[in-house]
Image (tube, rainbow, N blue to C red; front, top):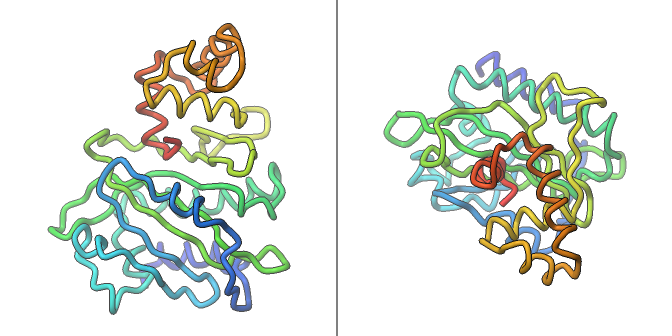
Length: 251
């Protein structure tokens, strides 16, 4: 095992469950919504108890050339670009600390984690992928159980990795976008459920008046939300906002 991959295992070691967790604590609708994608994608469920894989999508062979019958989690980790593996290690460590200091750890089941890295294709070349992870189960002590991981190829949208992390809140939880590894409590940019709803409607092509009618708010309120959304997302215009949100797995 490469030292870099061992570093990833070390990050998860103290956080994973020491027992089998069998029940998915998430609805079918949430699972379905999480797999909506903007490009070729594959997915699998990782059980942190023994690092075994299940529910592996057939597309993982087409994209990466992996044999579903013999695929291991280390095979998946080994496909990460050597120049991006350090970021992935730091991102996973950052997320552990983030939930400990800024969000109740037990709310991890109500968040979809998203960041990007390059991964090896079946032809040996590398492409940029958006990695999304949705924790399905945890034990009574908050240990990681099973997680749905989704990898979407996004190099048709961008070849530039921002090395930022986003946490998309489910069940009414706030979202956090464009987090840097050195972000602290004073620089967090929190997005409310209403703001995320508006972003998704903008992405579907709805205008201010249509959004106002849909959400039962005034058009002026929609305009204020849009201004705040652009500011907090560091987007110059709506087109940049939508592109950034697609890359971050928001829409």
